[in-house]
Image 1: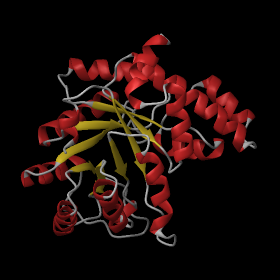
Image 2: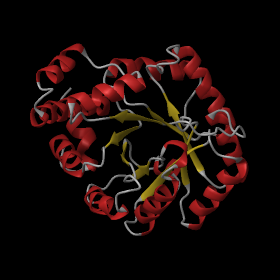
Image 3: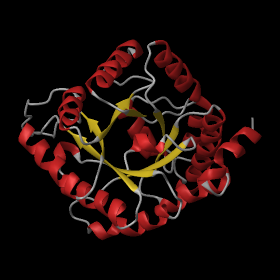
Length: 296
């Protein structure tokens, strides 16, 4: 089933993201995580793509397991900056052979020290190429706070308009911790006529230093009070995880109260923590909106 078809049912949608194990780890190390995430009944699970396509075979294999063994829709990430058109076509054929109908089309980062092929320069180029195949449901990235190399939100929205024109069906945002930034962003999208569904990316914090590295690379902003707690517990991972889960629960409850299209939880391959977040929000995905409204 294509993700756009899921929006014909009850909103909001809940989805998870996982990443393939590094090449020197057995791929089976993620299977238990997937089994535990399946029990939480997400609408789909996305699988990331290694820099320069280093994990691309594992991305296809894991997405296939999600789709064909667990009977959950899979969203395969696909980056284009270091791939030729022929390589993209080959990966697309493999996905179709495995029954994968959904792709998150991304530019991606150049591989360290490796050659960069130039058939695709931007995500919109990949989206247009995939759309011409006429088969996939295509997602794209959105950046409510901009990126380190571009903090101009108006320009980011123009990029989204270009992605929609190329054939993007929906968007997933970069991780965001400040909901007001999301609401402002969604309001601007509506004013520009962008009506495509937008999943809000939420990354629970499990380790202070790890999230500082991630936000440095992504440009995501951490609220001052929350960051003070992360500083306090920088040397206590258990306490940092606790305050991180507390924050994620409050953030998601507020997003649901504002009736966003969907929540995309960056699980970091941690099923126990994802389960705890959903338990505290209402035990089952279907009860989440009611719980959120009750807390307004």
